[in-house]
Image (cartoon, rainbow, N blue to C red; front, side, top):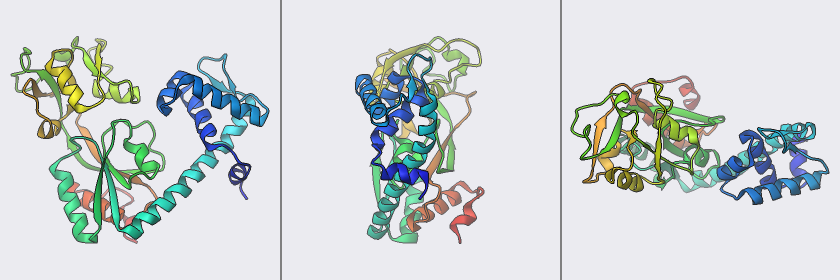
Length: 314
């Protein structure tokens, strides 16, 4: 029996272990609480309960950022393995159930890639005769929904905080556009440069990893001008309303205008920003026939064959 398995056998509270890992990874109780969708007091209470159960302090709360104690380092080394083993066990059962049901659960966000995804799914249906169930994901759920087994695959956009254990196959590169109020001086332009957006407030989101917000806002800017952030939005509809009200602008994917229109919003290409890769995210070790067929369809659609595709052909 491995030490990680022994931890699980000792009735380790996996929720408490996940809370501790989040605190150490974020270096801050408040940020960890946001990541876990719990209140800071509740998070602190759970970490204290774990420390009492083990009879040792696991984090140094006086340090900035918060860091593990010597006992915490020892615990975390094994707890991370235990958590990974538990996740794999849960995901294995979920995959088995889905394979027997012949259903492929595909996660997507609004305006994930439109027609390109539909063509890929049509090919998968022809190749496997499986049922495809689309599952809409929030902006913050992309890769975690795949890792946790809530979906078998997802169509995702960067950035990603952690892709360990996952596989990304690029479906296509999507140009980026800026959403502007129709009366804005730049709204009628054929394209704009990023420097022309300097000084304009950009929408924010307080429910996602802030790396996501900064990546889409192109922060930091090549010009060195600090990005100002405007109102917080959580959905595409909220984003469009904020832009239409001239409260902020938003840099987004070029496929968004295909699925989201607003009479008060104009979309203008940003010519000097790198395109956004639209990718298929799957668990790296997943060999379920529908998932294999989905990867193949994505590769054929993209006209490329990245390393590792032979693993699906064996």
